[in-house]
Image (tube, rainbow over all chains, first blue to last red; front, top):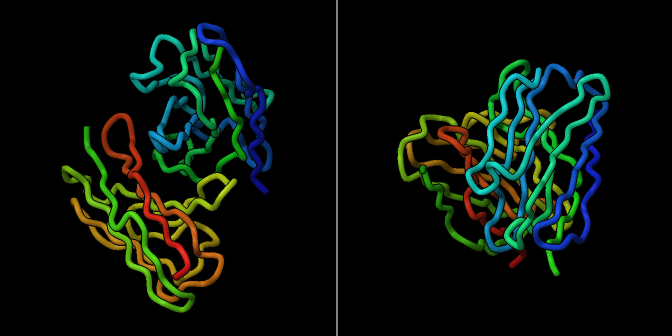
Length: 122
Length: 107
């Protein structure tokens, strides 16, 4: 079955960096677009970044553009999110999610990981 | 940016009752809408996509309708496991966005 397992969250000081990983199994990773979605009680669910199945295109929410970088390793079936210059507003549960479409993003989130919590605090 | 609003914020019902949840878009989004269910401590789960199509493994008591700006998620007869928060999500426009959610709780 499809599995997505996030890791790398934790408590970090403002201005510091963190790298999230999402290990996947149960499907052909290289065929699917992947997303990072975050959730907070105050702002709800927010799509942070998306990467095409082959890594050829990447898009970011304005709130993280220039600070976050999404990447993937199709040989390792793993998705990443490099987060730099973190602020308190980045505190959230971060989920990786697999797109519903193959070789083209439909922007429907078919499968989700269990999430990894990022807390930015001094 | 296209904004999604959901109503009501909370719906208090008993098992066996019918639930009707609404999602409204500030501009037309054709049928580019999904519904998700989220239970405490869990990730969201895709229920409906393209406004009316059930995702794999979703029971047929869940149904979606609507197009343009007005959408509805109907749960025909609530099961105990259906008490949760439900979110709508549009895929039109960048970035794709979610509604604030409707909590369905036990009356």
